[in-house]
Image (cartoon, rainbow, N blue to C red; front, side, top):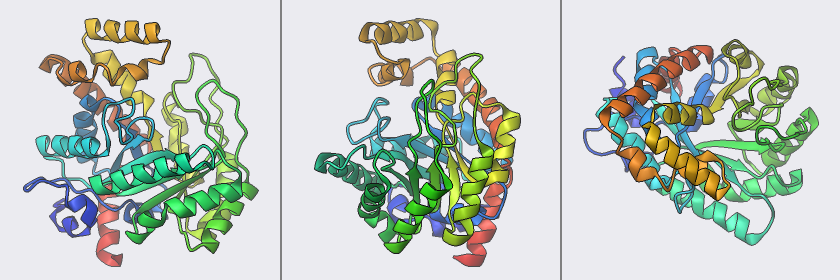
Length: 362
């Protein structure tokens, strides 16, 4: 399919960042999620900590005609580069450069994942505001404002305040209720009442999110070998039923790495329309990096007493400059994994669905 006609739907903030002649087509996240809301499909949102996986993901998306989102959380890519070494502009430039290199032209979303506000202090709020401003300037087309660490009244108030520039541009908006924990931690599931409470408060302020991230038992990070994977799809479906028709909101699923493909395939039946995959791409990149580089990264992490993900920034130059054979190995592995995940997410053909919706409705 020729996606040239979709270029007119690229948001101005994203269009300004696309180099001349680049086939890339970053679409408004709000348009994408509205287009797919009524379909039992899921947009795969890829947290890209190590860019070597991007070409493989793009090749798979092109082959299957699947919409994809590329995202970084606040910790991964804040205004100072987070632990990936990529600030918002650097992240967008990286995506567009890879898109040009592989001639990638299938529609995609650039998403600001987990723009967190952990308390009500002025500093927390201003840090989030500065990140949103930087992401808007860089060309992001969708934003997840995560004030779920706070009581719901504060969550709604902070979300309303920070989402103002996003709503002015009518870009994608994800909000969150119920804090999603790291792998191995205890958690409390989000309830229908909490979800409705947050949506009512936001709606009263004229705020209409596209997505609601909930705690349905998923966890961030790797699941440990033999660890039970508990995702309450019944609760997820109940929350979706309570908010979708009334508020037009679908569910965002976090913490998918390690989840069996046959279970992922059921997610779309319960109102999930966006699924985040992050640690999985890091695992693929680590498996394909030169062994001596990985050993240096492990030594650094052990010495610093930190998770291996924090070695990404200090070794970024070496990672980006690995010999071609290693880059190609990672690309092939990411391509194979992305094909499986896109199919499990029922995402094949979603690009055409979005294109048809835009042609008829926007």
